[in-house]
Image (cartoon, rainbow, N blue to C red; front, side):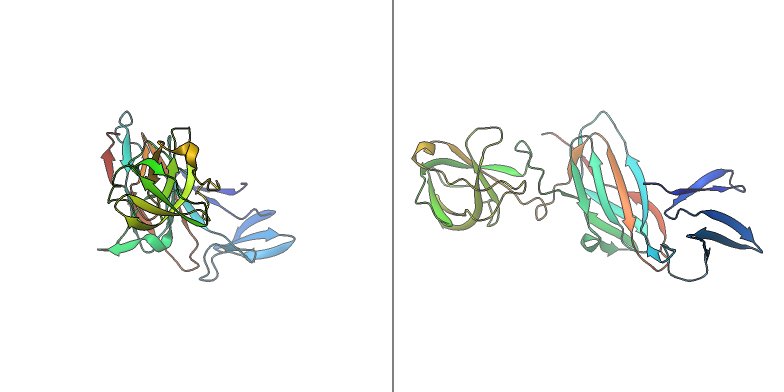
Length: 256
């Protein structure tokens, strides 16, 4: 996106980009003016930040976490030393995630949040996946249908988890966990689409003996994002003055 780059003679550097794109700029009597559509605009004359020519913008800062670049790790949290929370998007060489402004908690003057992977990013090799068992009786088709498994399912599975079956790449989507009927019978909701938009396909007699597995909800179950490095973008749309001093993350070496 086009922007305006500023230069600071006192710092002998380029401190910032600005969203506005003026036709002309001039400083006079200690005041900075610019022109847009032939109209003059006086900058720094009110307390509404990120507003130029009557249009509201956001501030953004981008950085890189790159400690131990040859080690694969999980970026689990984001904390910002700032006067307000900043919406955060993270992109590694393997995954993408986020921390929305509403997900931050303020602890000892630091805004702290757990990184969530985007729901559409289903990685069946990640720790969010778990086995339920093999299909013994697929049950009768319906909006809510039951599947009987050959063994008792994992007690870590929760209502709302996404259910898949088969060993395809990817496996076939079956719906979400609706309820637990017994130790080896699970009810599945076929009306809910998968995070990637896939529609549920109800298993039938041909699927007996196929493995059934679950994927935890990536927003509810926070495991972070996997990668060797992480590019993070912080965005703030406050109209009042706000300051950002530093950002950091907690990482854990991945053994997956």
